[in-house]
Image 1: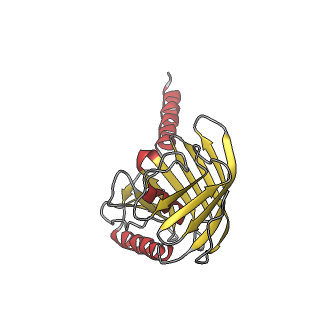
Image 2: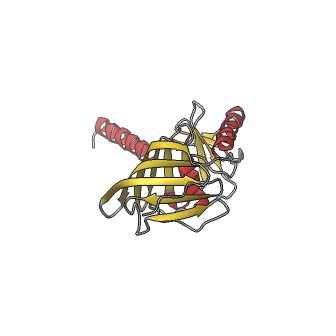
Image 3: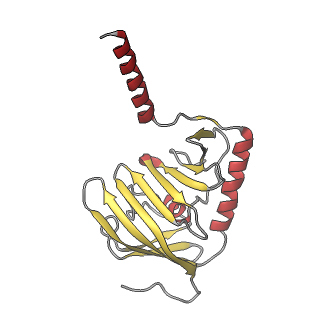
Length: 214
């Protein structure tokens, strides 16, 4: 191979490798880390404050090997447990269930079988568990703050000061569009498939109003 061709090939290989590997991670500046922590804690205080709400998401789930399923997901939160009902089985066979704040087993609502606390973090847009500033780093402009529970759990904070991503065990990642009360858009990706939720409605859930049957 002539020298110019070899140089061009090496440059192409380097560029391809960089695109494949994704943006490199660098340690976060202490000042930015403090700001990111403050952002997450402020969002957490609002999301996990005492409240009752009901919400409706338009949903789409694509299994890694299977058809895309579309439907609606209704949520009812009383401050301690989240009742959910799906118009179609968004993942697996259950069409309804309850996720408790005090702890629930893994749910099949989305691909990846997230633990109850992780699933609540996805739907609320932020985990109840506060993150740590230790070992924070920047990747693609966002600061990644690890959660003390470990296993790869982390919160991603954008340069503009919003919680825009979450990381969970098993290679599950979530992209978020923050909203008023709940995220406007939730996109979950993992080895088992993808789920996309778009918020249709959100409001208070009066005490005494039951979760609809059927």
